[in-house]
Length: 426
Image 1 (cartoon, one colour):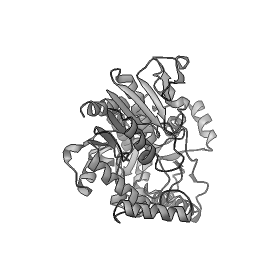
Image 2: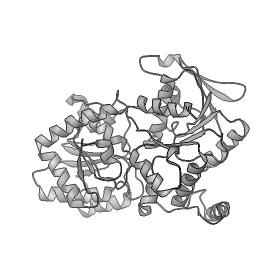
Image 3: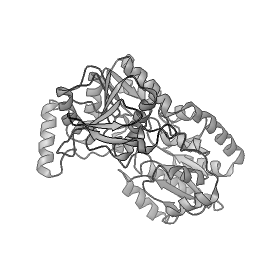
Image 4: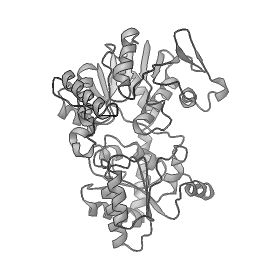
């Protein structure tokens, strides 16, 4: 069977949530499946990362890999796993690669099965198509999302895009980002043969907001890189990595987007309250991640509370350095307003951190008691949870122990095996 995968996200050099999901699924498909043939569809030539990702550290050396092109223009990954090749689908525009160029490819030469690891199904696709919808937070609370129009820059082109969107959907949707998410989710749920989502909570949300058969949607948990994310105790190495990001002294850690959806403005206020009420606590707050919608508000609150030296924003951190940043922290805080899964929770547990997190959506499902929960809408509840997790040694030990046990239930290999079983059953 020929399985086509949208690898455009996995091929990005700068990866976050859904990009890592696509990356690790493809990597593990290569490890566990030698029977099926795979085509990776990308919007630009494969970088070394995607070619190397098919390599398992102990199975093959990087020198065993090379990239070549066949007569049909396929980019061939020559490796110990010879059932993978890629095809670069060039597209002159910044947006709509999946809806436009991948649709054209499926019209001309469709695979037996098409797998889209993130959200948007092409307009033209094979009958056996499967999509992962990670969350529908935009349906739960639209004010947490940008409402800017999608499409090319420029007033005239965006006006044209909006007109096309209105005509195409018979006036139901505009070209605003949240409308696009709503339309593409609805379209995917109607047209895909199978839909994967990342937790039972997310599955329940989808079923409650869209008219879709329960049998069509299956929950498969994410994994984490268990070889990379583990507790590191070598102080000299830890300090050398922390110095690179200007991190000194004890700290509470958060990893994820710096945005309103993740409740970062409230977290900063709660941190200020905790510090004010507990002057003996000298910990800083390290917020690692890219700036998204709500970053300006977060920065304003930092200034208002004079926390410029206490709240650190190192930005996106390379995955190779992340285990050191986790291991150097005293606790992990996850205050999200909505979360379909939360892979950073797994990484924190694996690195031996006690966790305090929001008591909402799928976070309790993922933690299963391996974290201290708080009300994300109450900054005093967040502040109290952070204080407890820093000062109660018995609680800390119990949460660390529970975290080590809970994280054993997750791996990217397990995720890939369950996902591949669904693909093979289409």
